[in-house]
Image (tube, rainbow, N blue to C red; front, side):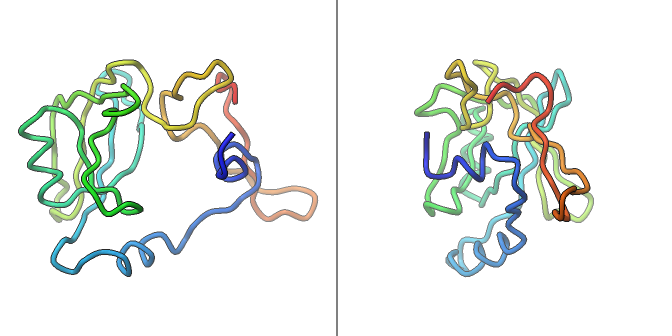
Length: 150
């Protein structure tokens, strides 16, 4: 189990509303990024939200593999290069304001998330918990969705 287990597996609300501020402080102003929504072309499930710069988008279009800019490591991130959870690009779209991208993908192994289930397989999506109104003094709670064995 990793150091982010409470964040990634827990049912305690620890949402990071400052994520975009943190990204903007770390990035080189000459290397801006945009959000990329990644959706399974067949199931329509949203798999992950990542970020891309010009270089990542060009690599995605050239290789046919979902490629991003890692905002935590400040480097090109080819999804699945080390884990095998490659996301094959089927289509790349841009929103109306041209400030975000949509990658329609086909997962090669079926997983997209770096969090592993009890059997050691990558979860198919990073969106495996539901946000609910809290109880017992908590304003917001999390609930793991049925079918996701953590």
